[in-house]
Image (cartoon, rainbow, N blue to C red; front, side, top):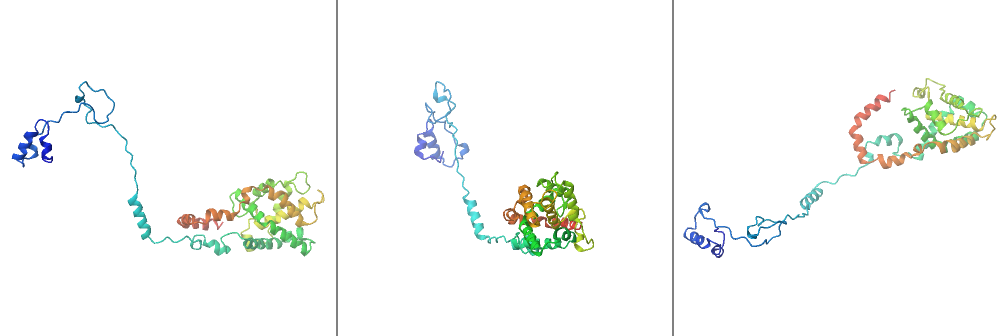
Length: 324
């Protein structure tokens, strides 16, 4: 009560004058012993907005006096301090170096292929290697080259070069059908020729069994003791052997006198086979450009971090299974 101004204490109902005398006579009376005045009379009607209720006849005796209606308050929170802290941390932290593929886990790809992407130059290097292997096979020379002139062979080579990207795409797609990622098994080869509508039951030399014979002929290894034969499966086609098989199929389908010769040039026959059967019928998934995947999904900082975190395990798996 002593915190109230004297003029307020004098006008308290009931005991205002008495309290003033007590406070004046003994200003140091402990609050515990100071008398408390009766509360003032309640107003005759509610001054504040309260919840709806039935007041008694004597409104000043209503138990709802002093209550306030619940009002929902809206608060707006701002992360002022947090933002300042983050801004300060950004100013103090050294700038993060920009990710560089030349310091990433993908560097070995460039060391081996001299580029991170499949380029025309890289594709030509692959083609020259595969074609050199095909042209060295005496069986291919006897069947295909025979009495062909050097000019005709060059035309055949360039035709195969033009179609080489599709051949690689088909090879990569179908070798994954049976879990072997390096060679084309007989069942995968059969799936390829059937998807491309190559077998002809009415043909003299292009029935399914004839195509199986071509598979065996293209898979024949003349020298089983050289280094290449060590990695060439005896019952599956390597990529260069698929190239030979396609040339043989083209000759059986378009240069067969029993079915009517459609062309006398092996290069034309190969082009017809690729244009009429292979390119229109292999699944679209096989023709997805690898560089699009590499650029959009593979070569980035997130994948670099992921591969690095599992690199020892992946290298162990590669070393184990590459020896088979």
